[in-house]
Amino acid sequence: MSILFQPTIIKNLELPNRFVRSATNCGGADQNGFVTEKHLDLYAGLAGGGVGLIITGATNVEEQGQILPFQKRITSDDHIPGLKKLTETVHRRGARIAVQLFHGGAEAGKFMETQNKTAVAPAYLENDPYFPFFKAWYRALAEDEIWKIIWAFGQGARRARAAGFDAVQLHGSHGYLFSQFLSPYINRREDQWGGSLENRLRFHHEVLKEIRKQVGEDYPVFIKLGVQDSIPGGLEFDQGREAARLAAAMGFDALEISLGARGSGWEETEFRPGVKLISEEAYYRLWSREIKPVVDVPVMLAGGLRSFELMEEIVQAGDADFVALSRPLIREPHLINDWEKGQRRKSSCVSCNKCIGCLLEAQMVECRGPKKENKKAGTTAA
Image (cartoon, rainbow, N blue to C red; front, side, top):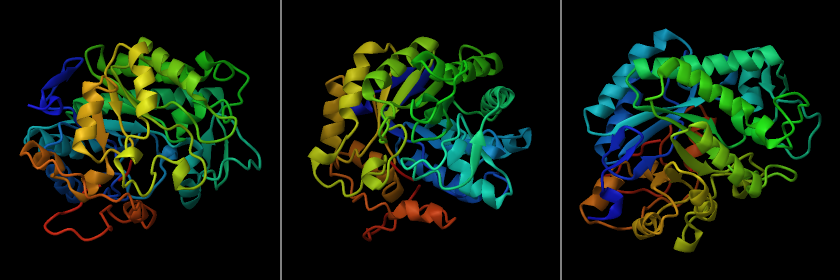
């Protein structure tokens, strides 16, 4: 049996294999962030398709952090029944599911404008040329507002456990709020939340402590951590690796390694296009390889994974403990089952990123790449 199909454990969570569906926005919620039948169908396909651990798309803990219409929320106890239907759908098919708790920070600016609200961030960068994704008005957070968001993450985790999720993951990458706090370029605060690396990680630590208050020490809490920015003056990998070490020491139970703040153009984001050669896959592997020896928790690797043999080699070499896929499972939600049956072909995803366009059009995400017979698409990106 391939190492990728061996059962394993994160904390007390038993997983049937080492395949993770990396968090993927699907755009299928209703206008108030509630789960819909579209969600249930999507996640049923993923769970039935063989992936061991599904991480949901970014799920808002606070309405002010929302970046897209029709994005799931966990902002109220009223969301729990629908989310419970979602977890039950996944569990009936033998998979496990974590919810990704999310706040967009300044990245929420464009959507907040449509709601007559203002987005927030650790600091305000006036007329900054290096932040092309901050395309709408936002403002700096006051101290009391930071604590309010920390509390909201704790409440989100409480609701997640009540809804039957097996774990939670914090979205700490891709230029969203956690990533904004960690980036020395973006976070120019001069109080306890800014300056040194430890201060820029204080938000992460306080959120984790609040979550532990709500769900206890036995509940698995993960983080998707951006360990290097794509902007000049941003987080560099030496500090990103140390941030990963400190996150593990804080008590996060698993780390998913990814990009921090995005730059301009697809090449400077987690959505690198045109991944065709095996040498172009696993573009964050070297980061993961350097982080593994300094942490004592499992490491998940995302980023352009397409070939079964390469994923197997990565885990066998000890560069990561789990492999995380997104765009391939949008195109082929049953890909893992095919691999388990011995059909070890490469994913047919061509990394065209047309799936991401669905979200920008407020559509349910689907594969819009070259047609493939008898394959239905699932959800978005990395």
